Image (cartoon, rainbow, N blue to C red; front, top):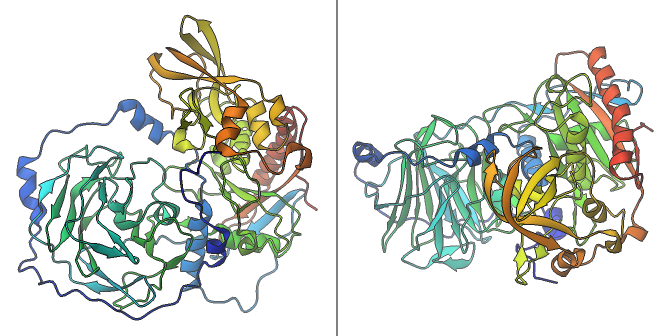
Length: 600
């Protein structure tokens, strides 16, 4: 088996969330205060170069993303719940839960589930992170004075990274770092670059490489007059994002971060017109974190873990509190919870999403962990939660096509399927580990993979001969490769499949991250893949198909907004979807798995 490409986030880390102690400060900055508060970025705009726009198709793929990356989204959920817990007052007399209607569970938001925006409040402010006795950092507010020497420009495009090493031995979470990467998305990483297009969230801060994030957000320096500069001197390492726009937005950010030889880190902010970002530090490859309020004067202890704050311009759903509230009146009898709402609760253009809260299956590309008890599953049965969002986004007919090739049922198939899929890599024809089977966010099948019209994307692809291909079907079923990951068939029942390498003449234009579409033609090199090529990299699936469950239980939940009453029409719509979903799932799994959506 090939070694894992990323370090495993251990179960112990998840169990230790929130246990980091606050240590005293053992370091402080003795650098001189710059003599002026003038924004040094202003002088750069007179010499601004022409825009270098991103690929139109890549931009469109980002806009059309359905659900983002489910890997470690549970860390975002736990961070939000714990951060809100700082200010949440205990309820002295919990109100009785609303009665279920048939097989639809009704949960009422009383201001405890959909939380208000956490507005970015560090404009014209500064932060100083100093090393503490626990091996991490404490933080306090300082003035917003920018360092005047910007240094050299770093030409970066959207979702890009460039190496710019530190000229002194910089101690970061107890490790000396000199190999640094300046990333377009408002952060610096050590040891490895980060140019992924996945969500800029708490999970990425924690599970990625060691990171200093003055403003981790989806930024695009290829558009507008914005620039990024690095001053890598012997006494400081300063990176400045000067009026860098957000992706697909006219709003921009001006922020600066400085690393100092004594291990101190300073962040400064001027113009910040974007509202969604993560600000903080992380030792990387961790599940431990300390959410803090960065607008406090401080010093605020950060313990030895990652430390920071997540800002959001729109209301946020506390999925941990939601699940806990559901379990107060329902038994722990469900593998998945499926949530529908009467108003939108998703953010960042996400249509719907899944978050995995526990996994015990090896060989499918998901780490082993269990945070189910945090969500109220005292018997630890819960494996994931699906947020389908507002019902008014979905047509009355669950089988009606409305989002590309998708209908409501195929979208349910994709989100439910993320409990197991799609994370499989393989050994390619050169004997190297490859992710060429994967497309959007590396958690869906590639557009150019013959996925047998899987609901996990990809397409059914017909080989026309002579290196020519056409897509013929999409989002209809779970393929046999999917069913292998789900524990429904052994590896011996997975036939040879293929993907198309180096596709050209793609008409209409599509990338590997594109959503499925029937009727797209292209040319390229066919590469056949055996299931052994997958297991050589991922290892065998454990438990095997012979030892895996054949019944999957889901609970359909209707979240009623605060101040509203349950809408009988919406409840009826949820029930229509539920009743159509069971036979669709049975057909999609070739009758190999029974889906039960009745409430017990």
